[in-house]
Picture 1 (tube, rainbow, N blue to C red):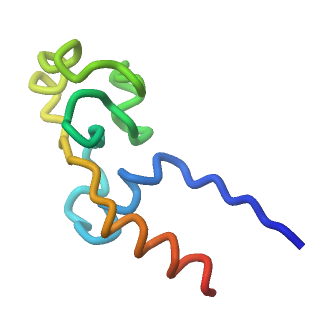
Picture 2: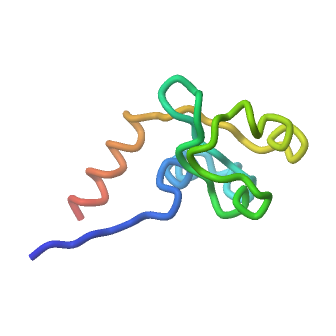
Length: 87
């Protein structure tokens, strides 16, 4: 038996689990070198921010709306992934 779970904006969601004060804030997560957007929470999507766009192209929009910007945190997300799948 196989299951496929697609978590909405997984990187952003994982960050918000461990930083509850971010839950109602627009949040994006950037790639390894902080060059491109790899995850956008639903709140940030409503502002017009899209995945896979170079960060420099939306920097003004991010600053204007006080969007929380996080870097990819593989230790956090991989740990969350394994905890989720061990249930």
